[in-house]
Structure formats: structure tokens, C-alpha cells
Length: 265
Length: 297
Ligand SMILES: Nc1ncnc2c1ncn2[C@@H]1O[C@H](COP(=O)(O)OP(=O)(O)OP(=O)(O)O)[C@@H](O)[C@H]1O
Ligand SMILES: [Mg+2]
Image (cartoon, rainbow over all chains, first blue to last red; front, side):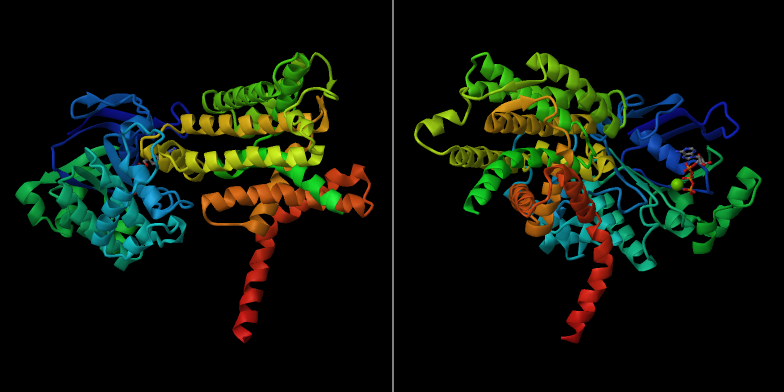
């Protein structure tokens, strides 16, 4: 589904600030894989997702979706294959526009846009049903401006937007990190629900080890721009936080350093 | 008094076309743009040249619209393809247009006195010039408001509106923001040039200096419209722009009537805009005040 080969990304090459954010990363996601991605601060998790999404160009390596190479496609062209939700709730939606208008923009992802009406009555029915499933009461506020929603509501909406048109790969980068614990749990629940319902291939970055263990069928850990652990199947199911910290120590020769991860695990 | 009012309405309607253009760059695309000055003069120049060459005035006005759209394309390409900041791209086009406009006119100004303008056919049937201009202005503005309401409701129009709001999100939905920005600029500049063409025919001359200060007039009209007639839905916003442009003209006519020297007009307009733009800052202090007043009730 998603194949990443020998990806290298260097920030500020040749300067004193040179930073190898991705150091030859290779990875293959099979159809229906739900990978949780964990790692210390600056491990390169966000950089990996951003390279796949086309926010950054890579310095070396290739990216394929369904065996179609997308390494050099501009961000907006890759959007046809990808859905994403990121940490900042402001980033995923247009705040001056209505809930239905945002959904309508997402519903046409990967399609040519023309002079047809931006939101049709038939779509409204679809949006109503989909929003209702989120149980956030958003279905009765279709024409409300997104700017009036709370961070959690916006993230839930962004999730729905990312999956409304089934993406080949769903990218989630700490999409619950800016939310309070209760809202974060709710949004994670919705995430699970949407992924399961649509059988989505997903890569989810989280800083919470428990979440990383609890969700998905596969867990990947990164450190200093490299993948150091890749656990799946039965092994993943039996994993505990202690195991994970222990295996991190052995693989990297260091203590796990992610303030947020340690605080929340 | 009625004369002043009618004069303001007729001018306001013609400037409303330009106000809507400014609104599209400034509010919809969220781009600070200075080309306005050049595009107004360009519209005037093309229309004046066309009319003096004996072209049909409506055709000349249409050519002015096309000319403005070409200027918008130029700024759009500078900004998106060559990655020049929007403000600077606009300034570059504005400067370039100065020379272009001089070439179009062949000299610094053209008189349209006793020429066949878009208003002539109405005057011929016995209408006074002011009323002819109100009727025609009303038709232009009406058609425009309906057209833009439709256009910004379509898929492409929605994408343009979203681009000014959150370009990251728009790209993530598979939309090329370069294209939406360029489209928005083309429409905006086209309208501003159209406005210039109408204004020139209304005042019976075109002048290379015509656009000077017009960006501030446009902003003032946008803001007056939003503050006094503000509305949530898009149709309401478009209409508020028209009312804003007319109100601006009425205010100017009144302060002139009250004896303010015409040379101080631009200072006055600049101060008005500065005040209006800083309204949110004052509102921060006003809202708690209002709330406490309501609480007492
Ligand atoms: N836009 C950028 N410009 C320069 N350096 C960057 C940029 N983005 C990331 N980096 C650097 O690349 C490295 C990897 O960063 P990245 O954001 O991918 O880490 P992360 O694994 O997502 O960490 P976190 O858990 O803190 O979000 C870091 O050292 C970071 O400083
Ligand atoms: Mg990160």
C-alpha cells in the first residue's frame, strides 16, 4: 500500500545546524495495516509523515503508494491518495467556512473542481449521517463556522474530512496531543471507529506508549532518524510499556527520552 | 442636499465595483495588494483609448475588464510561480502598469467630453447624467453581485475562499493553491479595471494619476460596509460592500460641504481607515464594558 525506500532527509545541509532527520528509512505498510509510530523527541516521526505527505521534499529515496511513485509529486497532487490529521487543530480546517463547506471541500479530494454548486442537498444528508456517528452534536450545526468549534470537535471533523473520501493511507501525527485527556480519548475512539469501518491503512504517531500499544496491529519505534523496532502480530498484542522501554534501551543503547511520553505512560 | 446624495450614490455605485475587487484580494484571498492603483488607471486608459478610437463604449469597457484580468494574471504569476511576496508582486505590477498605461493612452490624459460613452444612450433618452449613471451603475453592480454570489458558491469559488483562509488545508484537499490565488487575482483586478473604465466615462476624462490613493478608498469602503452593514452570509457581505462604497462617498461629500479643503481628503480617508482597522483593538475594551452594562440590567 505505502512503500518507503531508503528515505533520507537532511535539514540545513552543510551548515553547523545540519540535522539528519531521516537516516535511510525503509518501510512497507500492507493494506489494512494500522501502524502506531513512537519515538523520542526529534526522532524524525513528523518528518517521515511530512515527507510522505509532500510537505517536505526528500533528499534521497523513493515513496510509492500502490506501486505508483509519488516521490516528486507536489503536495496537492498526493492528496488524492492521502488523508491526514496533524497536531494543531487549526491546521486541518478552514475556520471562516461552515462545517458543511469544509466537508464538501474534502469530499471532492482528488477530483477536478468545476462550476457545479459547492455543496449539494444530497451531500448534506450524507454529512448529517456521518457527523451523527461522531456523537458530538455537530450534525445539527452544518452551517456553523468551524471557527466556533472546540479543538476536539475540530480534530474530529478533520478526521472525518480525511476519511470521507477513502484515502489509500491515513496519516495521523499526534492528532490528540493538543486536547485535554477526556477529549483526546473521545477523538481516539472516533479514530479507531473510522479506521475500522473503512478498513483504512494508517500510520499514527503518538507520544503515549499505552495508546501505541493499545491501538493498531503494528508498532514502530524511531530513534535518531532510523526505525529501531518494528513489532506486529501476537508479539504486539502481548507488549507492555516496560517491555517497550526495555527494548528501546537495548536497540538504541540509551534511555528513552520523550518528556511527554514518560509523563503520560 | 438631494443633489449631493444622488451624486454620492452614482459615484458610490461605480466605486462599488472596485470595492468588491479590493474585497476579493484583501478579505477573500487575504492578500495585501497595491496593484489597485495601477489597475484602475489601466481600466480608464483602455476605455478612453478605445472610445476615442471610435470603438463601441461597451466594447471598450469590456476590453478594460480583460486588461485588468491580464494584470491580475501577471501579479499572480509573480507571486505564485516566482515566489515573490504578494505585496511586492503587486507593487511591481503597479509600477509596470504606469508605463503600460502611458503607452495605451499615448499621453498622460485623455478627455472624453462629448464622446460616446456607456452613459450616452441613457442621456439621449432625456435622463440627467447623474441618474443615467445611477441606473447603469445599479445594473452593473446588480449583475456583478449575483454573478459573484453564484461563482463563490461553486466548487472552484469555494476553493478560492478556502485558500485565503487556510492554504495548508486547501492543498491537503488536493487543490493547487497557486491556481486558486491566480484566479482570485484575475477576477479582482478585472473588476477594479472595469470600475476604472466606468469612472473615467462618468467623469469624462482618463488620467494616468487616476488611481492614486484608490487602495485606501477601497479599504475604507470595505471596512465601512462591514462595520455598518456587516453580515454573515456571502450575499449580505457583497451587498454591504456596495452600501459601504456609497456611504463612503456620502461621508466625503458631507465633509467637503462642511468646508474641509479637498486637499485634506486623503489624510481624512487615511485616518478613517486607520481608525476602522483598529476597531478590534478598541472592541477588546468595549465588549467587557457592554457586558457589565447588560449584567446590570
Ligand atoms: N522544518 C524543519 N527545519 C529544520 N529542522 C527540522 C524541521 N523539522 C524537523 N527538524 C529537525 O529534524 C529532527 C526530527 O524532527 P521531527 O519533528 O521529525 O521529530 P519528531 O519525531 O516528530 O519529534 P516530536 O516527538 O518532538 O514531535 C529534529 O531534530 C528537528 O529539530
Ligand atoms: Mg512530531
